[in-house]
Amino acid sequence: MGNLIVLEEREVKAKGLNKEHKIDFEKVNEYLFDEDIPRLELLSTLPKPKLKVKVPTLFYPGCGTDVLFPLFYVRELWDIEEANFIFLDELNSLTMIKSILDDIGISFSEDKERISFYYDKILIHLKFIHSKIQTQMNFLPKHDIYFERAFRIMRDNIPEYEQKIIAALSNGGVLISDTGFENLPLEYLDVPKQLSSYGEMVMAVKK
Image (cartoon, rainbow, N blue to C red; front, side, top):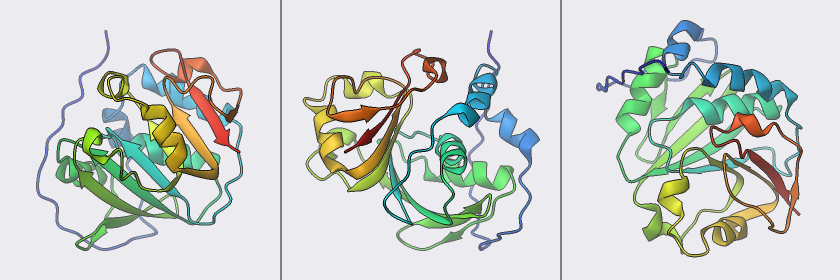
């Protein structure tokens, strides 16, 4: 039986950027299920596809409160100094995301459009879109990294979802998903399938 993750949302004030903060990894583990920890150890085995931009944009629909996993992947896969994250969810979970960052020792700055923070020396700018993905399918943001976890049920009933996502992904962009995206005009990379809780991990490059 997996462990129980308790989420406690609270208002957290922006304390500004701090590149030298120390992450509390014991707190990080409190936000991970036991079965996720050995999966994360597999990240070091992933191929590291090159991106065509110095400051990539990552799009994560159905993010919920998960700010940690895209950070884990970006840190492991790319040697970059800065990245833009666009999170989208029908629940307004930005306050919880701020709480998680604060809990693990990461401070952030904030303006009307986004929050910004450092993760392992990478400057992250995170914009949160509070919306259902169905209403955004004709307005998908251009992105260089598509990231998806535990979103299969939500998107399975959206016509041509995968095709529209690939159309919005930049040439040379990277798709990271725990399910789907089969038989598309992509260069599929060899990755451990068990990285996905479905056993269907997919990582591919748009050519």
